Image (cartoon, rainbow, N blue to C red; front, side):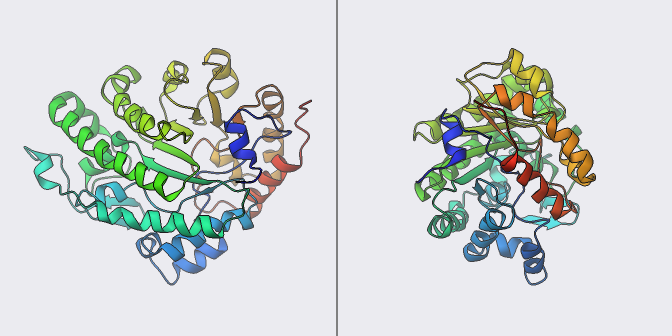
Length: 344
């Protein structure tokens, strides 16, 4: 691959600015994607490699970001275990729940062939992307995927049953985490075989448990996936959203880069965290709903941090929100790329 500011930064090569990309940059606010959604459902786009590849690459040309994250969904893992995902206006749900099953693994069936559309999408992205734009593969962490599998058709943000399951059925929880980890490891290998340059793990619901519980019951499975990826010399970005002071416990033996949510001060975190660990984030995605004057004021607060910390990727503390003005996203990308970051 020719010069890539994102890969260079991850590998420790200094540049005059931080690289920039956004979680959920493919879709939602882009006119091209909105036009596609009038013809196709989310599922149809996700399962059509040609359409998924075109949506993956659209932010590169439309927004000017420095990386292309593959357009798919973390619940493809649930589908590869025999559960059907329903993508509604209130977020994804699954056709049944594992919550009350005496042996929930009996309700699952391994169907890894359902993952192939992602490798086909990656292949098309690599053939059509600019040479300097790395391809970002990803998966959901086992804990976050299990959250949806336990909820089934339940409310999007209700984590009560998830926490109860961990405490009341630790053995069943462990077995399900092993099952999900196994298929997710297969999925990661599939993406690496297809040629992704970077791999991100989303643990969106990590904050549903106290950190010491999460560390004991969930982190070992994430580490297994990360080690599989690292064994192939692919850099890993890990996003354990909502773990609070648990961020300070992260180090380079766990991951290459740590993506940080917007509730955590990245400046304060850098003072206490492993200096060998790269950071990503943590701009509040709701900031992009404000006027550009306010966006500029907040943006300026990051320049002193990035002047000193050259192992930082400019990103949000979670994904781009629906109805975020396109002009605000473009404005922020332009400010990243045109500003003087005061690096010598």
